[in-house]
Image (cartoon, rainbow, N blue to C red):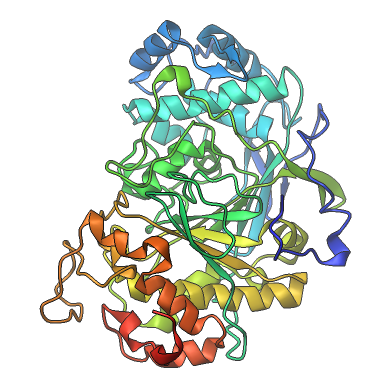
Amino acid sequence: QVRSDFSVMPAFVAFSAALAALPPCQPAASLQSSHPISWVAWSRAASSLNPEAPANSAYSEVYSAWRQSPPVLHGQQVALDDVLNWIAALVQQDPFGHGAQAPRVEVDALQGYVAVTQRQLAWVAARCFMGDDTADGNELCTAIHECSDPAQVHALLSMFAILRSELGDTCQGSYVVAAKPSNVAGTVKDSAPMASVSACLVQDGEVLFGDLPCSGPVDFMQSNEQRQVVMDIAGANIGGGARLCNLASQDESLMQFYPEVMALSYFSANMLHPPMMVFGARRYMNRYVGNGVPCGTINATASLLNEQVIQDYSGAFNLGGTSLPVLNRVFVAQQSLLNSDDIDAQIGMWTAALSPEVYPAEILPLYCDLVHSIGTGPWGAGAWHGSSQWFFLATWLGTSAVSAQAQAMCGHPVAMDYYVYNLFCENPVAQCSVCQYCRDPSMATRRRIPVGAATCSASSCDSCKGGQGRLNQVWNALKSQTVQGVRSQQNVYQDNAFDLVTDWTDVLM
């Protein structure tokens, strides 16, 4: 069910009709983009591509495990040979309808979009997977050719296996739409009310406040919450420093669990860069564990596939006169500013990725339909070790600015769904500071740390239980204020930013 505080602008009611199952089968579809599209040849003939010998050298151990214990999808075992036969047949097809040539369009260019069907994206991924490359080269093929990690093989095979089940031999499936904003921050309206916030304690699945459904250990990276954005805590590249190859950190791991985002790098000569919003990309593997080390955990092969993979779509999105079905999931990647104590600059980074006004106007109906809440964790306070308290306030202020713009442009607000981890995989225990102030064990010495502050531990998050922690107190103190009222209390950076919040006497402790 759509949460009770979400409404839909009347102009989009037809587009936002009751969610349906998979879209009707379309045997033909066109690539859509706001940028020029060109076409180049592939380096190899499709008939020469062999799925039994893919480019990633770690394939043999994955293939062996799959054959010994096939994964299950909807109660049926998925045989590896059936998946390999499907991709072998897929690369012989021409899903773009352009003589089997390779499309080239700059997905990473500012203020634009690329809309590609699931079958089209699987087609280019399959060719790269089996060792092909475009004549001009592309990041996806290069990343696969240079990778020797089984995580990437698991990721791509999982996508192929589920798409085989859904698309069969001919269907194009739904569209994946990658949108890039302009190079500016979204508008911050000082008089705007603070956005609605819900919080979840991941370790126990406890709702701290708000109406966010919460069941441990589900978090924003594996939630199926409708119309909730997955906020990738990105670095300078989307996918981090592992070059789409392994489970090194939160950002790197998400590429494996959301392989359609990985596959979009086919449309670039280099790694993709944040900010970027991707509509319709899904999680194909069974779980992503953000609460614990290491980041991301791939299940044993028998339970590899995500049987709750999202199949709901919101009618059809009209783009350039073409009807595009898009699944009900949104992925956003954005980085914080490393070592910056400028809260306005950090708010600007948040709004630059999430505000409706920074994206192409053609994308607005899709944004308005699918962006109703932002699922996030310790953005800015993961591998870059920012203050968890300070970045909670920065993201709440940023979401409030985004919400005001969405209210004006879409007719509904945008909420923030905040997930608290006692062992966030990139920076374990540090986020517990929002429950009861404690110092990050790995913090940078430049930060203003209270003298004698205790060091965070996993048990520090216990202070949040029962709605008794500092996070609940701050929420109670600020939820009825305006953006300007909250922003004015954060003119001086300090690690324990919650102590700058005023009017504590009115808060139930």
